[in-house]
Amino acid sequence: MRQLVRTAPAALPPVLRTPLAMSAALATAVLVALGILHFHDSGLTGLDGAILPSIDGVRPPWRYLALVFDFGGEPVGSVILVALLAGVCVLANRVRTAVLTVLGVVVTVAVTTVLKPVVGRTIHGEFLSYPSGHTALATALALIVALLLTDRLELGRGAAVALALGLAVVAGVAMGWAEVALGAHYPTDALGGFCAALAAVPATAWLLDRVADRL
Image (cartoon, rainbow, N blue to C red):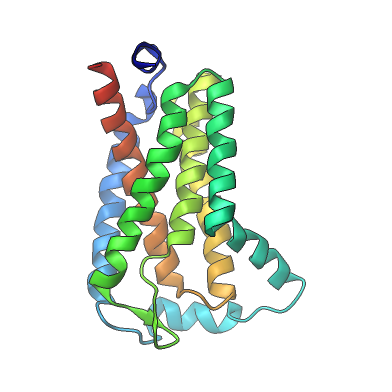
């Protein structure tokens, strides 16, 4: 197993190392800034005040779609998605990416879990909300899919960056919309979750490659 991991293709494709490092740094800054801005503050102002009233509490059939997305971020749904993606990576002989699928999600969810009580923002008066773990999970999985496709398709830097950020944005917006529509999060909670994944996944992939190369 050690030999298999050591010789496997990198979890973080070389063409994406610098671009994702830069985006991770920016995402970290936004994540921290939003956390400071909403520290123990559950008021509906700014971006939240402008967006939330228009999409909170959607009715069927959109509510059903939101519930489907939401299930993907719940414990059972997330385990299914992680297992499926890890399995695809193994079948594609991308062992490091399979490991990243598990570690990347664990690290991303850990970041959101730790930050929630630190920031102390609540919704409906009692539920810790910043940042959104569901949005972070969806974004993390999308990024990992992009890393896998970048390696398998041998994409150039421009195409790889467009794919990675494009998939991350689509997944983040979809899950973020669902969480806000179901009344579980503020829009900036979703943005914070998106940024958490954008910061955590590339860092985890880089560290995984460093450790694997030294085995």
